[in-house]
Amino acid sequence: MIIDINRVLGPIPADDVPSRDEAGLVAELDRLGIDLACTVHSHALFYDPVAGAPPPASGRLVHVPVLVPGPLGTGPSTARLVRLCPAEHRFALTGPHGLALAGDLADRGTTVLLGWESAGFGEIHRLATLLPRLRVVLVNTGYRALRELADLMDAHPRIGVDTATLNGHQSVEWLARRHGAHRVWFGTGAPVSDDAGPRFQLDHLDLPDDDVALIAGGNARTLLGLPGDSAPPRDAARTGGRT
Image 1 (cartoon, rainbow, N blue to C red):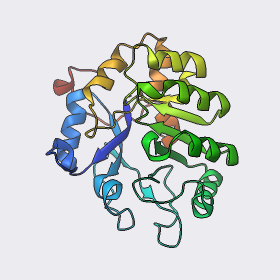
Image 2 (image 1 turned 135 degrees about the vertical axis):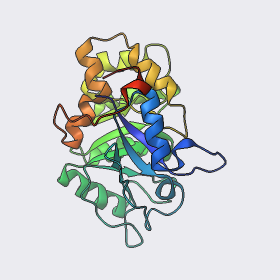
Image 3 (image 1 turned 180 degrees about the vertical axis):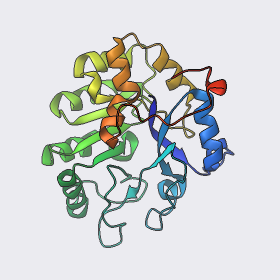
């Protein structure tokens, strides 16, 4: 089972993308042989997370709400996976309201997706130090952040990473061997970033099969509370029969 933990649904600025609607996104998942995608809506990501967007109707898409803390924020969520965007939505990740929201998420056992460029090393380190129970998956880190990323993952065992932009030679393998495959999630960041590259990389990871299975979908399946045989059907003719 292959689960993309980092996907955007809806139109994006300055580009016409197939994933502007659910049908287009599901077709892209079929094309790439991806069973399930955890999606934030572009309206919530780039425009107004308070107004939000309706959860997707397709069983292939898992809604990931974008949360904003404070009295002008979105309020709490019962989702198992949420996204925080402090830079995009102009709030302090480790300010009083930010820490109150993050503490509530830690108490609920909620996992947070956090963009590397949205927070930065210092704020992420401070958040993980103050709330060591909070699970954070850093997304869109890029290969240039590998040293800082390793520093954070060494210090904070509940910080993980997605593969969206970890395209340096053997970067994913190095992180999985150093920190464990249970801390690495398959993600593409599409359509803001490329999806075919991370998908190709997944098929060619130089790691044991069990580790690849965790990265591909096992970690996300556990996070989402999905049973092991829960992959929804997809068009085998379009995916070359891959399962």
